[in-house]
Length: 308
Length: 114
Image (tube, rainbow over all chains, first blue to last red):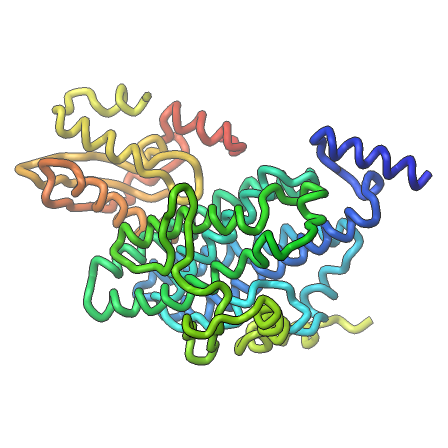
């Protein structure tokens, strides 16, 4: 029975058909799907407190509203992922409110605080662009039907976040002077953090179950290139320097990748290259604001539980 | 495009060009441009100064500044325009009846019943 199921499942995947229910899945596929959804849900969820802390620095009421609308979108996107996880047998409550902060699976970038309006809009221009590349790929390629369909609205909304990021980055750059210098400083530390967001380079990643199961369609390096091909020309067009350039048909980084990062100082040391093991160690240890960010949405949960 | 039939009647070539420019700006969250969405109530040009009367779908719209900055930037990119004034009005209020046929079609195709 098990092998028959497995053969039917392989057939569905090979023919490019969509998987619609757990009864069609193999245990390995289910595990990999849940893992991919957790990373996506956690990333959307943590962006809410991270963006909120910076949104408070908005320069106008309407700009504050834009930021809050973006945060609302991110929470709704997280909700889609956790809702699907619940249908796959996980407990939303346990995932969101009962996990240790270090067990969350979002990119390290969100552990480094966004402390100004400028840093928030750069996050919209670069972090949301990363989200756009990753989710766009899942939206196009994902073999799990319910998630693929759920992403239609998500893509439209991520576009709004990107537009806020680009619109404001351009305005700040045009203002020149100290405002433009602040923008350049934000890009200087946030650019390499987003480059590493896409994970290990393909030559170090031996096997990808996500690709095999068509949970996504592009490799880490392909997605990284896609991100570079939008962010580098945009930043250059508004007069902001980025440490990458185009060579023939692809983008090349102008610094050792990876290299060491001082999260407290928000500073990359291009003279101190490191190994991917060092990066993985930094990611696992999490960054300065991990516990605080998670606490922002976890702390009141227990207080309002109805005791039965 | 349907907006051209609706709005270009009597408009000079410069005005027509500005309407087309405005139709290049999409709503931030829905795949429909500002003209087809019915947000632009009027447009006049006098010696390089373009004045746009417009509204938003709701007073609490979180994208008003973003849209006004996009409109200003796009119109200033047109030859012959060196000043843009934007007048936001709430009367008459926007309703879905202000969508053009193309706008309605775009939103339907996207999955919104209008």
